Image (cartoon, rainbow, N blue to C red; front, side, top):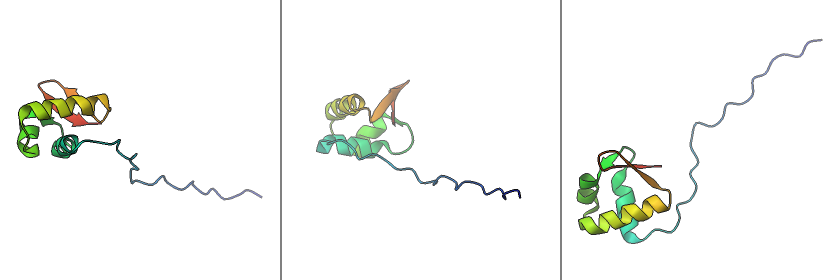
Length: 79
C-alpha cells in the first residue's frame, strides 16, 4: 500500500533575533534611530538627539559590533 503524502510543517514566518551585545546608551539611541530602513547620518543624528561626533563614534562602534553597515552616501542600515 502506498503511504499518503504529508507535507512537512512550514517553517515559522517569525524571525528569531540573537540578543544584542552590550551597548552604551549612545549606541542604543543611534541603533534605535536607524530603524528598519536605511537612514542618512543627518537623520540619525536628528532622531538620536545627540551631537554629531557622538553619533559618528556610536556608528563606528555599531559597525565594529556588526550591527549596522554603511552604505553609499553616508547611509546606514541595520544588519
